[in-house]
Amino acid sequence: MDQSQSLPLPDAEERALRLPVHGTTVTAEDLRVRLVLAADLDDAIEIDASEVESVGQAVLQLLVAARAEAAAGGQEFRIANPSPAFVDRVQRCHLAATIGLETGDAQ
Image 1 (cartoon, one colour):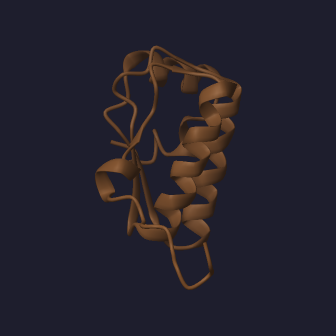
Image 2: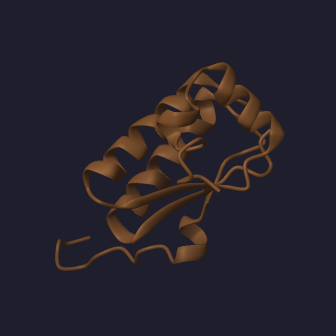
């Protein structure tokens, strides 16, 4: 493909940020790609955490970095519908304020 051709950008539904049921190091790469797209293409970053049953360190690190990047760029960042398991894990890791669960940014 020559450089005059460009790949089509995924639509908003394809870019939707939904945390997987089990957020592991393996699933973190897909989340990273989607966070980069959201940061580049969307006015706000909203992550649906409603189905989370477990979330690992790699996913938590991405969320911390994404929120910091969004704040630095003046972009809104929200965790929507956090499951009880997600909230529990984030609180036990003392990251609630860091990713916005205690500040009102997360919903």
